[in-house]
Amino acid sequence: MIRLAEGRTTDYEIIYRDGASEAEKTAVAELKKYLFKITGAILCEFTDNRHETPHEIVLGYTNRGGWDEELKAKLGDEGFVIKTVGEKIFILGSDVRGALYGAYTFLEKCCGCLFMTNDYEKVPRRETLDIDDIDDTEIPVFMSRNSYWYPVKEEAISAKLKINGCSDRVLTEKYGGGVYYAGDFQHTLGYLAEQCPEGERAWVQPCLSDEKVYQTVLKNVRRKLKECPGAKIMSITQNDGDTGACKCEKCRAVNEREESEMGTMLQFVNRIARELKDEYPDVLFDTFAYRFTRKPPKTIMPEDNVIVRLCSIECCFRHAHEDCHETPGHEGPSEPFSDQLVEWARRTKHLFIWDYTTDFTNYSTSFMNIPILRRNVEFFAKNGAEGIFEQGNIFCPNGEFGELKGYILARLLWNPYMTEEEYWREIDRFCEGYYGRGGKYIRELIDYMAECSKDSHFGIYFDNASIYIKPDGYATEREAKMAYIAHAEELYKKARELAETDEEIAHINCSEIQLYNYKFFVYNEICDETKDDPARRDEYESARETVIANNKTMFRYMKMYGMVCPREFIWMDRVDEPDWTRCPLLWENPR
Image (cartoon, rainbow, N blue to C red; front, side, top):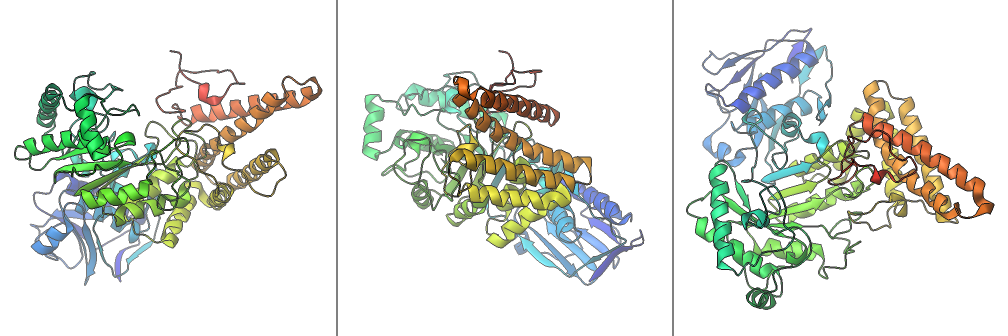
């Protein structure tokens, strides 16, 4: 054991490499800042040109040793080692992100910090800080990791949680940069083929058998790569929508032969990848297996410098992908996603996954996928996926469990093989840290919601969570939904009563927006049933008053906590007083 600090004093110094990178300098500054917050002790920092002393925290590959070229190669850009050797503490890792990730991990594992969201963390205060003997090596499983949630969007928390995916996230050299695409990372074929301006979307697929289309796309791919010299990946991905591939005679012949409309797409991307391989040897060319291109073609195999990014958009998100083959809200495809993932893993050298973790038509509704997130990420890892994009709500705070999901997904993307026990312990840790002493009731609510939805199948496009979340054992659905509301309200009340800070109250209120969302649909349903029945006029008036009061509170919370995007691509930041009887999903800016 090492006594790092006692009584606001320390004998330790931080030693780092002469000629350190911006990320290494950030690591030094962060160690100093947080160790001061924890202990009140100020650590001096020096480059490794300084004479050696017994009490050092050694950061990176310095002349103090502890590493060799074999270890350096093994750790790569992002892996690290934290170890105690005698009285010294070594945090070994690259000048890219390894040393920085190691520093943050040291602060969490050895010093008790908990980094949760953009603006919230827990830092302990200790009169004495003792560091137990440690020898911890961590190397990422996934090359690209993106927890696509607003609460973990900023670059500081991204580095702390080891998120390196740069889609709608800026990671500067101060935090080690990240994995960048050249230009946009999705649905790029429209602008590459000059069907639409860059930044907009086309909704019809171009003819991929047309040589003019190929030469146009090749020209624009070259242009984007020249504009983005540090990019690791170039996206050549089909236009959005489910209209299918071009149906001309040439395209149809290829796709019929390949028994998949991925035939022409992969053939097209392979050709570009071959043509640019020598010109851009370090770039990978990325394409979707999405909707009508999800099925692997019969004979065409991806080139070694091609990424196939498989998208799970049709899946059930209440159950693990490998267990459930339901496709709620979609008619197909007929082959299970899990089977196609295994097949793509067999065929491609670089498999990426685009997974979905929220409801895109109602960002603040309850989307109870927490029980299965670990299973899905582990499934991706076991099948050799190299990059994972977990799409949530990146646009604004979320009135559900967006903070928890952003956090726990980042943890999973770094450690996809954590056990079920470790997973729930991590969720417990977050609930206690983020919601305070009342977090135990939020945790109880998660279990209750999971139990009430265990037999439901839902996709990523639905408005009304009361269809899917309701307890068993009641004579009618209405009774079940009312019982759910009553129990959830009680749990939120108990959580709020134990809150000790305004921040904890705000976190609880923010999460409760999902319950107001749920209540609207239940009471609005009563209004619809009773409004034309004179004999039920009192019931109608009572339900209507509940809808209005419910919506006023929900709207106030949404505006208070910055939830200005109620559903994908729709904004309400300029809405001041909506029609309180209308569905909250219709609160949107004037067009």
